[in-house]
Length: 443
Image 1 (tube, rainbow, N blue to C red):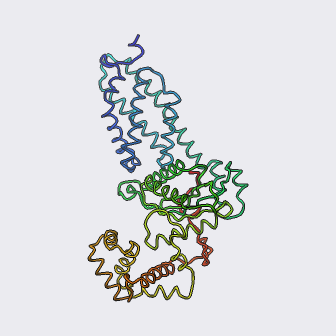
Image 2: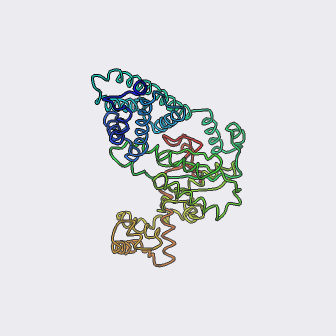
Image 3: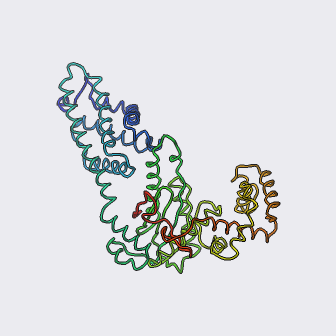
């Protein structure tokens, strides 16, 4: 009876041959995917060794079970296949490549076991072939279902409602009608983050598909944001940053040091999980005041970036001097002009700025500039000779900080209604439609 139910080649059950070859076979399947499906060759190596390799190993095990029993995978296993296909859809892998991957895997499995078939095994060959085709048909349907469902979800009704809510929050006015349509209870306060994202190391590798690496980076950020927060955070993100609105139960007027510390840890964790440097300007506001908070957070981030501050959280309190000096005033141009003697020696200006940003620590400045500390000393002396300003004098140090802030402000792009900003401090942080590839989501 066992002979009728389980195909055997040379007296050995086919599924046992397949399971025995699984470790080496899984590696061979992954190698063939990279070779024959170009998009898999551009995936990050971490993903190939991790998620893709696991799916291949699971597929071989599942195929062996079908050969043994003739029973196709149940709903739990089909759900896992659909989820895997959904991840590939989110990463932008074409559907034909995802389906083709399973077909290539099935071909490798068939080649592995059929090589041991003997002339007297014809009935078992036909039985194994029938079971493999039935398995492949089921898997192909599950892959297509998971992939299409993910693509539809990206444009689903809830997504449209969330985008409408975020647009209303950014425009100002009452957002309660849009929140009701999205099924969201508005919090007392939103923590508004204008973030800048550096590249993930995978984005810099020449043979890696940059689009896939960016999507993986953003998915990790969104997943960690959802895990670390309560409620429904909203985001409009692209590869180099964007905007995040985090619901918060503490009213904006009561937001204090403890809240800042928690948010700072969250920013650090988001950067760690997405594998990229993350700098954020932040402001707290009631839902009706989010639009003003977006402008402020965007300006704080811009100032933090141009003044050489590192990754992490930055609030208005951290950049008060630079913020004030970036406002138009009769003194601003004169302050900026104090640094004009350094225009012909940009390395002197960079060193002076870095030295001030590092708290007058020459070793830290040298490490950041990747030069010897003696080089820092030499450049600082030259800068002092040219400008007449010495960092060891307290009054001169304040003037230098003000001069850099004024120069950074004057070098900002002209603000106009066309880019959502005005000359009277109405700079908006990144929002929907402002960055190619940005997508509004409930993170």
